[in-house]
Image 1: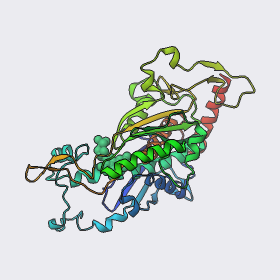
Image 2: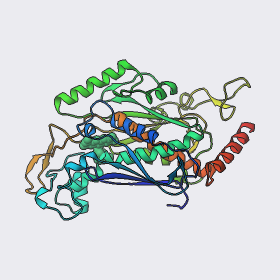
Image 3: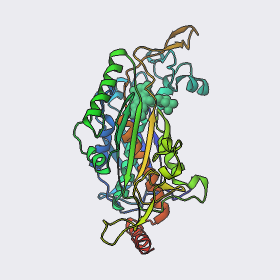
Image 4: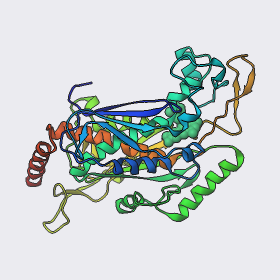
Amino acid sequence: MQDGMLRFSTAGESHGECLIAMVSGMPAGVPITQAAIDHELWRRQQGYGRGGRMRIERDQAHILSGVRHGKTIGSPIALQIANNDWKNWTESLPVGAGDPEKHKAVASPRPGHADLPGALKYDFPDARYVLERASARESTARVAAGSIARQLLAALNIQIASHVIRVGSAELDHPAAWEEVAALRDREEILLSCVDSAAEQRMKAVVDQALRTGDSVGGVFEVIAHGVPPGLGTYANWDERLDTQLAAAVMSLQAVKAVEIGRGVTAAGEFGSAVHDSIHYAAENEPDGHTRFRRDQNNAGGLEGGITNGEDVIVRGYLKPISTLRRPLASVSFATREEVKAAYERSDVCVVPAAGVAAEAMVALALAKAACEKFGGDSLREMMRNYDGYCDQIRRF
Ligand SMILES: Cc1cc2nc3c(=O)[nH]c(=O)nc-3n(C[C@H](O)[C@H](O)[C@H](O)COP(=O)(O)O)c2cc1C
């Protein structure tokens, strides 16, 4: 990784003492509030079909470094989120040798989870340590880090929101406008984060069916970034393309198995004339944009050639169904090699809205990194001068 670039990493086990996020490369002078981080953490905990764990946790970020008097100071930002559940695990998951009798083994690997490949790879006798880190509890730390990125993007008037477009077989059957999706961020109760209440009820019925039958469901979420200027990312090198980075960022989330940009999936089956977004030049009196080059539609999802084109950036994530099943599939005992049922540990049944929130964080981090690369600057003031100068340049283009 290059020095100076916006980057982040996380640490922490699902039932360990806490989760840690570390964000480096943020310019100084970005206003940061803990309330904004905690709101994102709250949103990640919501959604119909979550398991008992989310009733134990009340996630809150503790800012340890890098922020003073309400603003970033250019040094690494360390964030800590405590696990309330840790008090129930101090003896079974100690840092020291502890009492091996208290160890809670995950005795038979769950198909679809990281249990078996993780145990084989790291030479563990059971899957306990695998799930402790493979678990999506880790995405809590990403959401905290992503909130820092969001607070930088806010200075550039870039906003990010997500919504759910499918849960199992139940689907939202019309496109959603940015305003509708953005309004979901203020909901005080999050059911399935769908903009259409009839579709949301159909989604709920699918989750109810999974709850009744001891099964699980996946689905599709869509993240929209609004207000993104043209020119973030580049085609110059494969790994600098913003679509490369967004796809990796969203694919890296637990249970995401496919990523789509714009109408990427259905476009593959259509003629070019039906897919590509015609260009026109806006009249003086049309509402303000970054440039007067405009599109009538946005099938490209705001990216052409790995560069943002000024339209909303639209990224979808496809989630497989949760792999821990109350009616478990066949597996094999790690200890005896006999055929047994897969292990069951308290689990979510549907996490599509929460995955959307985690994906918003990953998109925020990818966009903030691209913005830092494009506009540079060690302070927000310096960055804004560069941003304003560039906006002026493309407006006159
Ligand atoms: C927000 C969120 C919550 C999740 N909760 C669970 C869970 O409670 N039980 C479970 O088995 N998997 C859960 N998963 C999925 C697993 O973490 C994931 O399937 C597993 O780590 C294997 O990784 P993979 O699916 O990416 O291959 C969750 C995923 C997300 C995004």
